[in-house]
Amino acid sequence: MKTINSSSLSGRRWTVCLGGRHLPRASGLLLPMLLTGLAYHANAQLVSYEWPIAPGEAMKSEQYRVRVKLGAGAERELTVLRSDAIYEGGEYVDGEAADLKGRTFSFAQVSYDPACGKALTFRVEKIFGAAADKITLAPRSYGLLPDVKQGGREVSFQITNANRYVSVNFDTEDNHTVYHGWIKHMLCVFVDPKETDVPDMNVPGVVVYSPQVEAKVLNDAKVICFPPGHYNLRGVQKPGSIEDEGKLIIRDGQAVYLAGGAFLEAHVHYAGHGQELYGRGILSGRQYIWHKSIKDRRSIISLGDRAELKGIMIMESPLHGAVSGKDCRYENLKFLGWHWNNDGFRPNSRTKIYNCFMRCADDFFYNYELDVRNMVLWPGHNGAVLTFGWGSYKLGGSVLQNIDLINPEWVSMQNNNGLVMGQNNFDFHPTGPTTVLRDIRIEGGVPGLFNLHPRTEKGQLLAKPLRDKSKLGYVGDIRVENVTVDRQFAKGGIGGATNAVVGGGTFYVKNITVKNLKIGGVCVTEQNKREFTDIDEATTQDIKFLGCD
Image 1 (cartoon, rainbow, N blue to C red):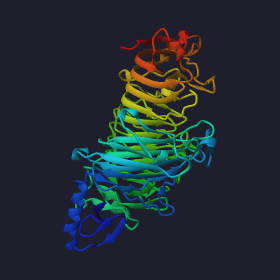
Image 2 (tube, rainbow, N blue to C red; image 1 turned 135 degrees about the vertical axis):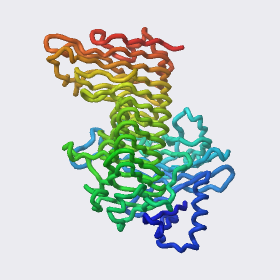
Image 3 (tube, rainbow, N blue to C red; image 1 turned 60 degrees about the vertical axis):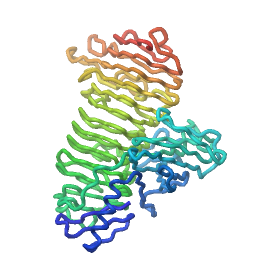
Image 4 (cartoon, one colour; image 1 turned 30 degrees about the horizontal axis):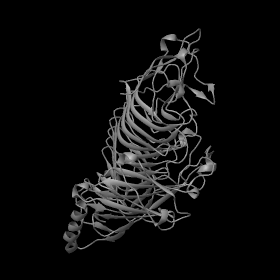
């Protein structure tokens, strides 16, 4: 990969990044040749990345090798990266630490232009343990055909579209966790679309980050670029730009570009609105720990209203993933979380979230009237896909459609697992239009889909009775349609509370319509709904299962 990177606002002094090497102050005679290289990169049909994998940098996978070729072209080996499970740190130990210990997540990524008319052929090899009797590719909706070779040590498959996030599972005894049988060494292949918004490095205001760049230059930049290489901002202090153990501050209208091959250890915070964080690089929060004190907690990304996040990998956050304000856009993102409180994307109202992969260990989305489409979701052991929150949030009105849930790891309903959940106080009212979950395919076994009830903890009601009956609310206004589930091994729950007001008053769960829901091939109807969901008749209203077309 070749990119040209400006290192000053004037454009008179610049840095060439070639395969991760930095060659300062190239001659003017070299500039046209490098611009030609940049144009070639911009038009490339297939782009792969070299990642920094020296000790202390990104970690190379010890479990898998991945190769790819375009059409009948030469095969190239990809750098497969790895994340080791984070299950304890500072002031917590995850409740599933015994099964998280020793787990890994490996991934390889490319950018691809399917308009070239040539298919990508991936060849994936398991380089640890035994050969597999069974190799599965998920999600099934992609229609991928595995070609198993080497007696179960290798699988090949073809892809002809971008925005493809594929789980490759070598189903062997040495690839299962001890207690729950989860995939121990996970592997994903990410196929992003061609980059069309690589910054023009010759435009004033485009600045390449280095430790030597002054704070004022970063503060005044229109775009801050991180070329291929490893960066750790934790010990960097640049007032107004980099503070607080590596907090990269993105100012009003400012953008940060992470090139493919850039591995950045930092957390990102906003000062204003309209920020952009994009590219094909990686943002990691592995160096931070979870804190009991709310004031010391860090989400790995916090941005303002009208922010855009596109293309990057977000991994190993100590808290939530990408948090932002209203009217934002998330696209082509990859997210990896390991432990509870690793919620996924938490933008505010009217945000669009398209074509992303998310592996969360807590709630994927808060129901802030989001537009969520074309997603691959890998649920960890904790957290729902869509939540109405944990108190008196003003939530409702989201539309989630065309969603693949793969390899779910829920072992019970707990307080907040399932497709849609609520943990609400008695004054909660859903906002906005009806919440819709449509065209959802769940591959694997789940304990249940619905987990809607007042605020509780370990079976104990925590929601406090209201003194003012006029404030009494409800949970609901939900439509679920066109959902398939491979199998269900427990029951979900829908129920409110009769003691929601001092002196008497019921907090209802109501106005829920379910149509075209099939679990284990069985259509869920009014007649058999209680086989799959416990429904409290005394505290529910207008719960309808309309069967299947």
